Picture 1 (cartoon, rainbow, N blue to C red):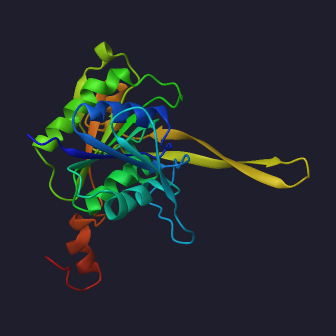
Picture 2: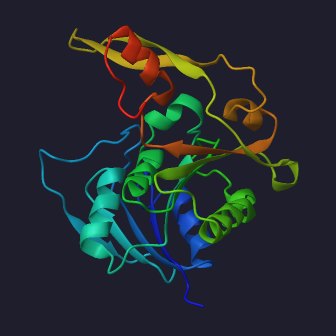
Picture 3: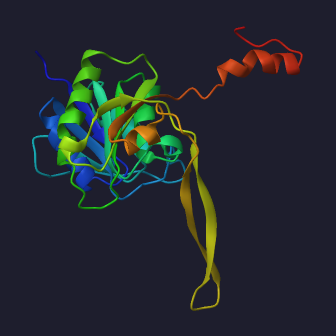
Length: 260
């Protein structure tokens, strides 16, 4: 059988250990093309480059895959790969492995997940992978079997168009990970403040600081599954419509709710 075509990207940059591990894992499954940012792009969300030009180059890294470095965001990478680099549409797009969590509310800030969501916009199968370890020398090896299993099963059992997977992996040894749990996004948010400081020239500057507040006690929420030692898998859609409130909103506005 023909090996699947796999597009790999990330938001930590093309040389980040997370994406290099993901490439190694995917080389065992299919034919891999990597299109990733030439510098870290964490927290870029679904940003695209519109006020400056993009450049790319093929670079030589270990492995049989083709590696391309792009001067843009993770979403740019997916768009550019589909339009300028790939000769046919990939069977799946995998993004990551992110250094740090993209569970709960983090999904909307994440460049890793935005790349996967962009692939979903294009009707492609897509998965974003994140490890709950921000360290540059994090150990990704314990995640290999789980990542490959999720990718293979997604290829064999495609998600509906527009649905992509947000996969988060706890920072645990392989034998301590309890398994994989399909979850919903936890109700949680960042409680933020801007720490005000003064530079040597007497000018004020600010650092974004804060803490993560999980307000969700549900066992089916991704944050709690991760805390309990499970890999969380949340199916994500790019359609942000609150469909369940359309009819009631129509009544409030004394107008018809489309599709009701």
